[in-house]
Image (cartoon, rainbow, N blue to C red; front, side, top):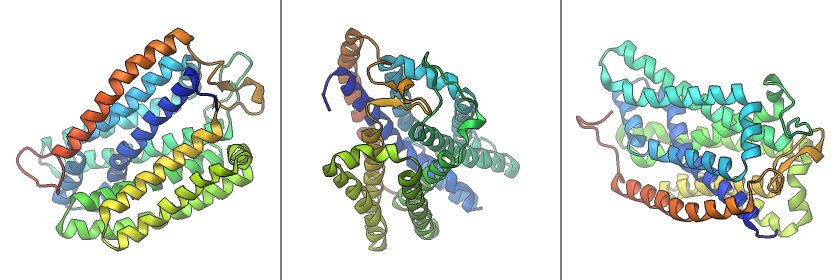
Length: 340
């Protein structure tokens, strides 16, 4: 792998999307679990466990989208035009989820809160599913014509493999969110979450194993680089060890280490995805020669250089802000008059 500006931007975009998956992933997981309890106070505790951080976590998605637009505008144009309806649904789900967090506690009526609870959970699950389906389609390959434009349909994106990746993403975020919830709660809700977490771990492990087998059988090009470079199998091994370590740490009540292992699983999964996709950004099927890669879809060399300087200033600020917020709001959730 030659480390030129195009490759650096490929890595940087990947880091930003990985940061989003790792941070906003547990937000989405908390949302997916919200309706598992029917007590208003417990739902408020779950909301307030992510209340101080959810909007900051989504900064990573905005930054990643901006980086993709600046560095690889052709990919951005093809994805957002080809996946238009899917991204419209994703945007609607994220908006209704955010509105639900802010509006839920504005009125005391049961029907009002129930409505926003459903909106919060539905938006969280739909967002996770659509993100996974998008990744599944990128891995499988999408029809791209000689002009670099999407040549398929919305329903053509709903193949079994992308849907399987979507369900696996939901399972991953539910597990990630449940572990985070255990760290942030106490009492009866904490005990409930411990039960939910073990079920979420089992659900994710089954989904991950099924997706791995399906990838090896039906999407073999997504393992070509690992096959060609046996040392890269160490990343796949690290991923398996991270996943295996989650129930081990959780069983011994080392919730923080279980959460770190969950983060490690997300990082290694994204790393494997990026390594096997490289240098492509959008793999074209059935015409691989039409694939959009880090060279034929990139901005000019001068633009990449200027944007790298800007990223060198902005990304550390985002990281510092994230660390600061998590440090300030560390510890268990306590409800007060300012809570959601």
